[in-house]
Length: 511
Image (cartoon, rainbow, N blue to C red; front, side):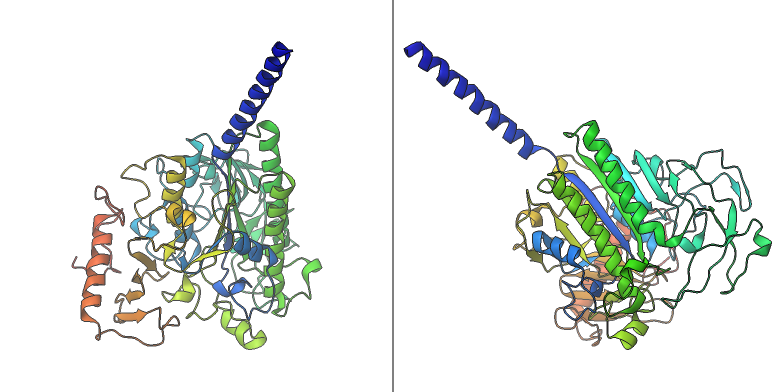
């Protein structure tokens, strides 16, 4: 009898040890990471951030309720390409040769070979990595306009920047070379031509059939140049196809190895023009076609969250949601027509140095680490993700990586503390600079425009220019932005070189 009891106790001990060990392993596993990036979505286009929004975004509301909301989160620029560069590299895009505006579709990729990206960092630390959606950082296509050899691969693209899988489109829809690319090829290549067509649901344009075999015969109702497009490409299919492919890829990863962490960068084309909601969303909300398009966008975010629930992945999956800049110029028309303020209380929108140009929704949900429903009210930037991921992995970044990236992990662990974050640089599409440190924002001179100073705690709408009244603060901020520019980095470490030593937008720095 004694031997039998010893035998039973031994079995229970081994079983308990196995369960404890298994549980510890599951809890200590690096999280899956999903980064969802929208295009031209303003701060006021999330109903949890804008109580007066004319439509609801229940999936975004859920992210806020179950995660951490950064109410003072910023894209690194005010237009597509430079914001995406800062997001993926942790380095400000104005340090590259791109000083203003955006890139086209068929150009050398702005991310140089060998630069650490979110994808390469995670890939090199045992993650499967994928990018689905809009790239807009440059690709190199075989041949020239109308003279392509689509049997040849696309080069200098996501697969060369740390992503192991790519399914998506090269750039914004108005730049052309539109096809459903998987890897370096499109099953149906862009061999026909079209131009912008009028849009019945919004004052912008559509990219829809019919298409022509010869660019010389393309109708141009909006007086725009012809673009290359695949016969099976339709603008309104982007969100559905992107979400379908994202779910398909995650399913494949789970079937292959459910213990292997994955990183998915899901880059939507909405609510950027063309505003093209599917008919099932027509009539929803009270902000016209734009509101319908945002409701559809939110619907697809909800599909991703539902997939995580169904697969039991929600607890240890970090979902990061943000936008590349503020709302397009129709924000003003929409405010008058529908009473919906896409920029919320903030000044102006896309392309602008003011808050409406770069203060964007930023939510992070990670139930295993982040307490639900918390908010952080101090400035942070999208470039901070690289250092954050590195700290989660327990690795150090080299001096020539993530030069403008500061880990947000301490905020994940305790959102009540004010992090010692260095100043953040804002940058407009025309090349104008601003520096943000705490409550203070100093906008630098540019062309004939002079300096401006705002206290955003008391004046978030930037209505009261205090420049000339706070000399000590003005001088301190100008010294700080000068050092950040000249040192090639915001963070501590060995100084790095900007790709260009001086350029005309640096009007306050002597050449």
